[in-house]
Length: 213
Length: 213
Image (cartoon, rainbow over all chains, first blue to last red; front, side, top):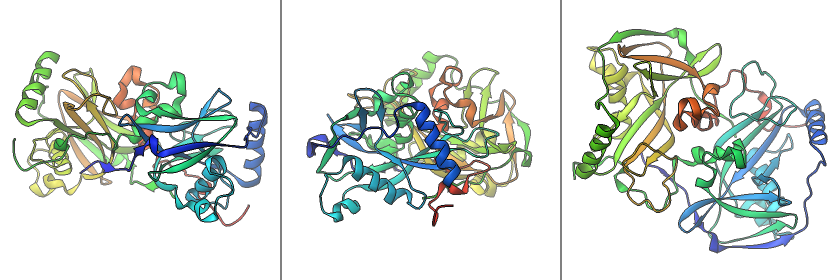
């Protein structure tokens, strides 16, 4: 069985402009957890979606990562309204965060982001800041389910990055065994991408062949 | 998009008998690396396949793991002849390791192991013991490609475990953030399984629904 191909294009095909600042919705961890709790009471588990978007730099796959205020890193995405589906909701969040404002609705409807495979899921069991890549035992009502999707990019595109953020392209290998720097969710990225044929020079011999060479 | 369902059955449906000892092929790390080198010279990159087989214990998914001589852990599987395909080769390795000897060839042909999704890939760039979940930069001829497949089990089955090994069912959460004990390949398992709906009580609200509740 062959490694599934994913189109990954050179970073040089993309351009980056600024858009308005997008401050965090809450000023403190306490406020953020309070909002999670209020939302849970109103509409149940929070559903979040995040995008893993790959670009090639020096022939090596990199992940597009937002850095907020020179501090923490996050994947593009966000949480959904209860009525939004994962894939159209994720496209809406991406356009809100990184889309060029005032472009035609055709593009905003998702003409150029392509939501692909579900790669992984993170669960938040309680009203605190911990997530796990499984539902811990004895947890019957997790408070958030965050899904990571592969989002394929076209070869050329303009990203509009909020002025309070930076958009970095970080090598996949940089996250490996590096939860200390990037946190557990980023440290998991190399594993969930490893089944794809995203590397420049896949040895042909990774498939069965007719006889000994 | 819904979490993909996987059939995971209770451990109580399985029984375990003994089969003949299966000592490691090499007595030392040096001998093992020498064989890798010889094989590379003869037939190119080594292709290995391993099985992630899930069972339920107390309603929580566990992974079947072999422990050799009360020492190291490994997933069932092994390496392939160049002419073997991943999936039929994996079934052959599983029958050699854990199949009941002298059972009808129908069963040995794969009547009860079902090779499913490719979950992840590990690359060994050099003739040493390190693997990575990506091909490191500047490596054009990795020496081994190890693929991890989800293997679905029937509800009932007899495993014949070599007398020099133990077959453990280890909870998925036990591997999380636990490379210190199990090594990086096991530590990656929770991530690559996280996209599946393998947990007892998935909250229904993880999908979009028609309106606010």
